[in-house]
Image (cartoon, rainbow, N blue to C red):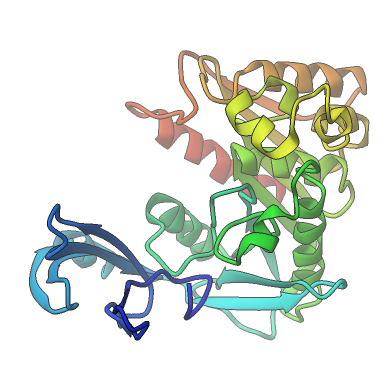
Length: 335
């Protein structure tokens, strides 16, 4: 990440400490070496550009293309794509955050546009990387064709920024992350081309957790949100992950409860779509069932959709198409 936290590159260091860059192309390089370390496969992509796989020697010398997704690139050339660019700003407490923005295809800076924020925000995952984001990128482009600005920001706790940036959420997961996403909300709201009353958010898994918190603990900011397969209490998530960041519930009960959307259900504000697969073996559906119970108890109106016999990926057959059609309609109707 020497060039940028949005990029990944391959370097070589000799025995005297001299460092050489072996991947000059801007973007994200995923490297796999052969057993003898004489050759490597470089899977490369960047914003709006699908993967190219090449074979290289260990001096960085290109040998040949293995796959360049020619058909995909040809198909993409038939569509009008919104411009994608990078963003950065400093929070009130001086933290530099990075993001990307997709503009509507007919963007006019004199107009005001609604904004949909995409969030993940959890340990080990960045949404803000200079690479080919595949299905999500294409769905975001579809919304850009419909006149929406799409943005995403990586908050504290995500990788690519060093140990302190990643570790600052220890024992308090969901606190600084929400603060940073609310700072991103305020950053976008001040843009002259943004309709500040029409900003929404969506996310999956940890992103669903973040969306649920942003509409409850952070109530009043976002007009709408979509949470897919969200964690709603860390007491229900697997110990090998949760205890790594929060210790045990006995050692750190506040870490488990102070940022649980269930405990803020009474504050829900904005249109809310909650989605889960009934046989999710990662984020168990009990998360959504207990959150639903709390929302009903607080007499909050929201939309709930359960995909029977679907796991955390909610895929297979036309299932994913059904889900993204549902999400598209929810955005169009409520943002």
